[in-house]
Amino acid sequence: MFKKIILKGKTALVTGAGKGLGKACAIALAEAGAKVIIISRTKSDLEKVDKIIKKTKGSSKSFVCDVTDLNSFKTILKRIKKLDILVNNAGTNRPEHFTRAKRENMDYLTNLNMKAVFNVAQLCAQKMVKIKNRKKIGGSIIHMSSQLGKVGCEGRSIYNMNKFGVEGLARGMAYELAKYNIRVNTVCPTFVETPMVKAFFKNKKFKNKMLKNIPLGRIATESDVATAVAFLAADSSAMITGTSLVVDGGWTAQ
Image 1: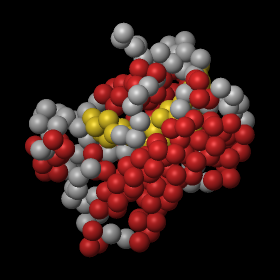
Image 2 (image 1 turned 135 degrees about the horizontal axis):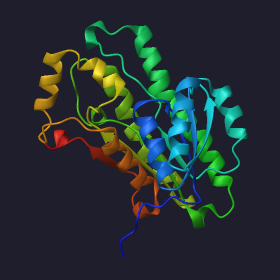
Image 3 (image 1 turned 30 degrees about the vertical axis):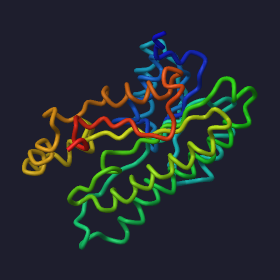
């Protein structure tokens, strides 16, 4: 029987939800029926996302938080009674050639893209396993990874390291959390039409080179990725854990 993407009765937390992929994922989960908790560093961004979700008759609650601030995130999590889904999305990139990569950038990116991802996932998982009937109702943790957790790319050595690490984390978590019926997967997009990527693609030479690596001939949309996340969040993917949903237009198939 075909399983639809239905999240009614579920509570989802999305980090980095003020812009780009996090915003798109939060809206998609709300449209599928989930109560969405959105987290971002910027209050004005969260207010805009709240308005969009409310226009679609969805439910959302927002918190201003930098996920690298562990104590701040712990405080927010204490205010959340129920949690079924985590979209561990907050992250960024600072492209540099490997031989010229600055230590400060490596520390910043690794703190956000790896350490915070681990800390947020661990805290959320600890809360999820304590919820009554967890094994019956299940749960889903989705890390926003990247095709660069699968293949290398110029100027992205630190980001490669971070995302390969996230891929390993997801597999270890999936194995250990399966007994609670909590599934753990990653979504691995190619370059997506987000504010961050638009800034990178101002370099036309780089943009054209990247597009040549995508057999489908285009970059992904936010909707492409958000739909994949909603699928992994729902019971429609109930037998899928410890793997990656690669949304890359065929880049890694080559």
